[in-house]
Amino acid sequence: MEKLIIEGGKPLCGTVRISGAKNAALPLIAATLLAEGVHTLTNVPDLRDTRTILRLLESLGITWERQGTTLKIDSTNLTYSEASYELVKTMRASVLVLGPLLARLGKAKVSLPGGCAIGARPINFHIKGFEQLGVTCRLEQGYVDAEIAGRMQGCTIYFDVPSVTGTENLVMAAALAQGTTIIKNAAREPEIGNLVDMLTAMGAEIGGRDTDRLTIHGVERLYAAESEIIPDRIETGTYLIAVAATGGKVTVTDCNPVHLPSLLDKLRAAGIEVKETDNTIMLDATGGRKLKGVDITTMPYPGYPTDLQAQFMALMAMSNGVSMVHETIFENRFMHVAELHRMGADITIDGRTAVVKGVGRTGFNGAPVMATDLRASSSLVIAGLAAKGRTEISRIYHLERGYEQMVEKLTALGATVWKEQE
Ligand code: EPU
Image (cartoon, rainbow, N blue to C red; front, top):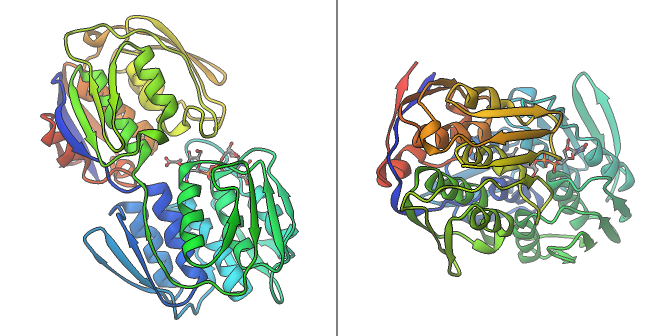
């Protein structure tokens, strides 16, 4: 296993290019199962998670090739309909093949993901939606065994809570159903808009993009098409917060500022200068300005993203004020707190709220810490970059699931950071 070593205390400066979004690439890759032929996806990040879903596609009989950031996937020979526990346990998003397999083959057997470090994360909304579309779902020996004779039938689906991959799974299934499906209280994350655009390019008829009510008029066939993955808003936010934490000045390029309304507002409220163009964000935290404490509450898009909660908490722990961090999406997403304590943070947890008493940028010292999940890991990287001295982060395979070339990108911004075998 590898660990990440950071010699902290240096402001990040320069320019960093953002990669394609992990959480858009995963559903778009799964969507290629819906139509035979050669699909082209561009701006695809090369991450542990994108490699996992490609391995899953291979296990279903699909072939693919990558040239740089372009992926060509030939979905013609879709021969198998089972996603094994071995693959699903390493990446929950594997469940995204359920909808496409049902739509194309009328059957799918997908391992139940089980819990993960940030919460129980059930898939009951997905299953309820498939059943409403006419699918018979049996839960047996840790697998969802789903089947339908003929096409799924359009229906109205309501989410108790907006679910990102739930919305994606059901939109993909409904695209090939008979009749019209309406999804109410649908998630509105930009990655879903990216998927809707891809499905539309493939011949699907979908109304209500970017709203909480999607109307899908099922079609008989879809066709292979070309689609571009949107920039990763969580990677963008992570770099912005890292620059703010180190008191640096960086221009983030190839991003979409429109997808980060809440974070940019919070950064400005903390006293940081942020300037946007169509596809760049310049953040200036130089001049030794003190950070103000700012409260955040995680919410479905366009609210503050849970995937940037841990990183912002690390920043607030270095502020000169007090802030409240309220996590409403996942019940166990404060695993980074105990690790941040080891570096000097003063944070108290009360249920789903963390009270963060800022200790100032100089209050953080490097320490050995442990990564527990993807976004918790990036908060430790941020803390390590800002802290005095050496931080060693073990279990960094979590980071590699979602951040492309993080060591290279940080090094180019002036950080002293490298990987070592544990
Ligand atoms: N939920 C249920 N039942 C379901 C589905 C969801 O109770 O059937 C609950 C969840 O437990 C949670 C809430 O609904 O409390 C929202 O979960 P959602 O389904 O939206 O999460 P997800 O689709 O499993 C995606 C991202 C996550 C991100 C969340 C929230 C992908 C591949 N994953 O997960 O990303 O945190 O939405 O925005 O898109 C990450 O990238 O680090 C990551 C965890």
